[in-house]
Image (cartoon, rainbow, N blue to C red):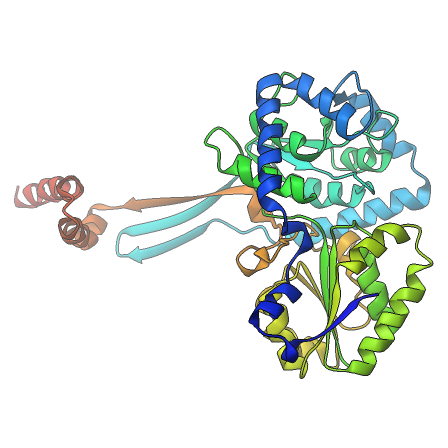
Length: 438
């Protein structure tokens, strides 16, 4: 059963333990093992990926690339209801991300000085779609749709092979729906390494996107720090949810939201904050009842056993604790939830009120479900259209513009002892002075 803790009875070390993520417990060992996988992929390329498929996925594969014809055919093999669901979800995601596009920015910062900002799409993007204990075609949409909206010329998908040696049909259908014909059979840290450094079959990309387990997250962090590697979107690891519920919340709704994240994996984490001990009791009982109805009950049970209910003094304190935890998903099942959103300072995505289950964000509301975990929401944001773009600043000064701010640049350069900087301005100003005299 969910562990019950009282926040105000805990000392500081107890509070840190209450908010600790279980997946981070053995990070030092994980980092070393991931580094070994990355090095092997860099050294052996395709052979390493095929070997890791045999070792980790328990499957023999002959080719790493899924044939484009197979990708195209996957969409046609879906039932009408499944295809409609993918299409509606894709359209909602497209609408929300299309609205994030910005016109070029131009500002006259001083007379004769124009500063602009323009955007360009990333050339090659690697989209990692997990398929460990459950395939995630929704993630394919969350990555491929923004890449298309941003007009990235070369999006490629990497996804783990199934037991039959192929890719999940739903993932392939989502790829086809988004116009992607490059899908590669590779999962885990080895897929991240292949996308970052390239192999004979898989192209190296400029940036890697997508969530994953602790291994994937660690691999993304490592390759992003390698000068020869690739940038990464954000630390998006095992799923987590925090629910703030008052005494009026429906305990069945709260329990269902907790379990919807717990079923992702044994390393997922769910947390309930409530000022009501009676509500805590009701939710814990509802979790146990609903758990018995889930097809992935064993997975959810493992996550629940590592999760907790925390009693707080009031809803204001609940927000303080939540902001400290910085959850990937934050659900507000409280009265006047919409008016309380301003109290949220750290969260990946917020779900407001009793009729907004986190599942909507996972699939079809339109927001992106690739979100920071492990508390990284204190400094990182969820995936957005700008993550698929380069933002380039441009400046242009006229003669009058140089006259107006050139002396400022000279003074600041001299303060820093950088004579060459000052001279680059002074030589131009001298030409303008000579010209005016003539």
